[in-house]
Amino acid sequence: MQTHRVGLERAFSVLDQLPDVPERPNARPLARASGCVAFQHVFFSYEEGHPVLQDICFEVPCGARVGIFGQTGAGKTTLLTLLTRFYDPTSGQILLDGVDLRDYRLADLRNQFAIVLQEPVLFSTSITENIAYARPEAMEEEVIQAAKMADAHHFIMALPMGTKP
Image 1 (cartoon, rainbow, N blue to C red):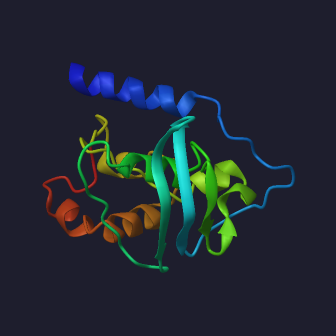
Image 2 (tube, one colour):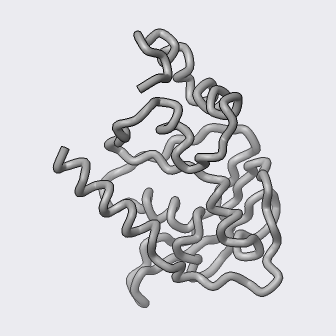
C-alpha cells in the first residue's frame, strides 16, 4: 500500500504542476481528434547542447496502434511528453490531425490521451469509478464503451460482483 501511495503522490504532483509550455493566444479547441500523428524532423534537448532526440520522423495513421520499446534512456518517455506537450520540441513539429500541437488548447490536447503507467494503480472503489476517474461525469454507457475498447469488459463482467465495489 505504501509503495502505491508514493506513486500516487508523484502522479498527483505532476498533474498539479502548472504547464511549462505556453498556450498560444486564440488556441484552437479540440473536442475529439481522429488520431493521425506525425513527428516531422523533431529535435529535443532537456539541456542545451545535450540532445535527447535528433531528427525524429514518423507518421501514425488514424486508428493505428503503436508500441514503443527500447532501452532505458532511449527517449520513449520523451516522445510521450512531447506528444502531450509537457515540453515542446527544440525544433521540428508534431502534428495531430495535420495541425501543429502548439496550435491546440493545452487542456483539450491532453484530454485526447490516456497514460497508462507501467505499474497500474487501482483505487479502493468500484471498477466503474476507476475507469471513469479522469471523467467522473461519464455516463455508464461511456464507461462500458471504454472497458470494451480496452478489451476488459468481458473480464470485468465475469468478476463475482462485476463493476460493483
